[in-house]
Image 1 (cartoon, one colour):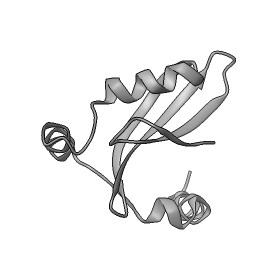
Image 2 (cartoon, one colour):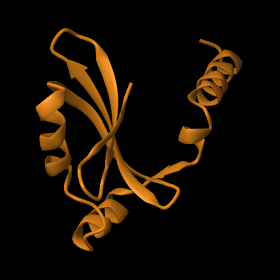
Image 3 (cartoon, helix red, strand yellow):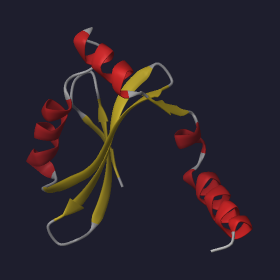
Length: 100
């Protein structure tokens, strides 16, 4: 795929993601460890336990991000039937905020 076409596709995906994603900044591994150690966020394993109760599947991607002044886990899950689900979990308490 030519570079110009790839850049156009990346731009289109970024624009279609909407303002909510554009205002998020995901933490680096060191920042993530620090946030968990300081008690600002629960460990990913705890967030995944909350997820399993309602949405069974395999987590294929997990990020800890700052959305405004809130920390959230953004999880990409492949459900048993093959459907990809994106889940946003409040990183302070493990509550599911959004499922798409």
